[in-house]
Amino acid sequence: MKIRSLYFFFMLILMSACAKKTLPVYPVKTINNWPEDSKPCNFDSVSNVYFEMQRDDQNLYLHIKTTELATQMKILRHGLSIYFDPNEGKKESIGFTFPVALPDSLARRFGGRGEGRGEGRGENEKGDKQNGPPNLEQMQRRMLQRMYKNFSERPKEMQLKGFGDKKSIILGKDPSDIQVDLELGADNSLNYYAVIPIQKIKAQSEKKKGNFSVGIVSGYLIVDENSGQQMGGFGGGGLGGNPQMSEEERTKRREFMMKLMEQMTRSVKIWFVPEMK
Image 1 (cartoon, rainbow, N blue to C red):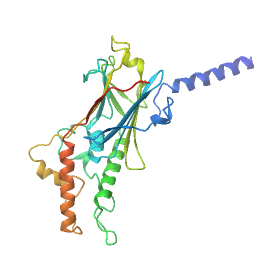
Image 2 (spheres, helix red, strand yellow):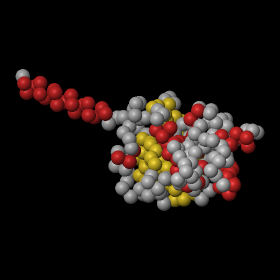
Image 3 (cartoon, one colour):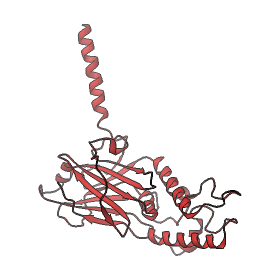
């Protein structure tokens, strides 16, 4: 009797352990035999994005990396979609979006209310007598860290397109065979990792063999007619409100923010046909 009870006890533990594997685990790199040599070797000079896709018998492994602040902001605030076209075109009918754009972020002002307020504003943003105001490199690092922190504190929603009836899931809570996550690198880069079952793509197409194209498409900023006035609120405290800044520093920051704003209005659009070895 004791042997039978012990047997059922161990079977229960085993079944529980297997059940947990149906849920996503973070970070993505630690699961599904992520390729050890994953170093994005392809480069898109328009958006300053490195990307690469590898595969094994079951999965596709996508790695996207960027140190471009404007691109990082477009991903974290306005979302990123990954599309698959079995006909090697640029059709956006099969894919997923992660992260999902912030509520009304396409219409919000540049550095507007809510989550965007205070991006880049660290404890030394107002400057101090010893160190003075942060330089542009420090400001960019703080902006990215603040955006990533806000992203990390939100539920990890992923929206599906063309993969059946289910349209939205919460990673880490709902079962999902697509694994995806974002990480900050030591070099201030934003790294995007995704694991996609090959069969999931094939199931949506009559074309069971051959290559397919992959699209990397981000959201972007839509600027309204008052954007010039609104830009002053971006980053917290305006562009030139710090009394410790010299006129040269104010000019550099203003030029930086103008360039950043212009870059934010262009979507990342990369389409490629991966070599499936």
